[in-house]
Length: 351
Ligand code: PMP
Image (cartoon, helix red, strand yellow):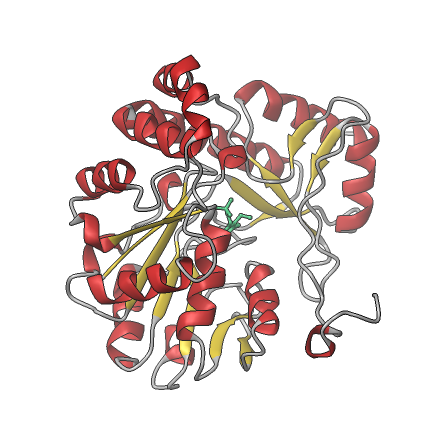
């Protein structure tokens, strides 16, 4: 740290993204990307004309993109916010709505704590129950902003919409942010509840189900008032945060939504195969509605299994954290990739 660094941030522990090694080719099952490429329309949209257009600033209002999102999700454009990945939306939302403090589960997306610390906001990590489920009652009448990933990460487990409604009703004076990064893989979206609950902020991303992690595109659905607050933060940070290529790719992707939803169904099928195969090998596998499994081997610690798989050219995610040390998070790749993964695990276990 240089002597110039803001002393308020001297203790800040930054988020560690999943590794993206370039030393050899891996079967990458560590960052929840889609195994399937973007749709044909996305390729077409990124044409010569679009590249020539890069000399101009992109549309800060992202009108075409918001209109497409409004069409697909049956909302008004003014209820849609877009940003450079959903991480940016989370960051903006913590800054905008977290002044009373923030509640989130002790085992969840690691960035929540980083954003709270970045903005010096008080926060409380609420322990998941022993089966890794969320107890909605823990988040009721607490007078704090609530942030819940649904499905949760890295567990993949869902909180039913009824429980989310209970939290929304019990906290009318605070924003309840539901991070739906993985909702398209079998979860239930709260997007249709935004007209009923002005405190609900539903956040989604193109990074997982829409095969565009590298394009960086996230969106939020909420009441017009909450969206206007987020716009204020965005226009105080970087009004051009969704670049022209990504806006065009996003519009094209939404016009071929069926392709992506079919891919989600393929991933769910492969997830069911991988879950059964791991269970047959003696793993404990949590019930996942996401594009990953959270699994405990029993014979090896999470770190050992991660290293043994890496030697074999397969990357999974391991978190060296209390309660989940013995687990690994395994992204669902293509059927072929998952068969290779299972074969590698069989070899490691000597099965
Ligand atoms: N929320 C959750 C729960 C995630 O796992 C991720 C991906 N790391 C994100 C949000 C952020 O995704 P992105 O910024 O790529 O939209």
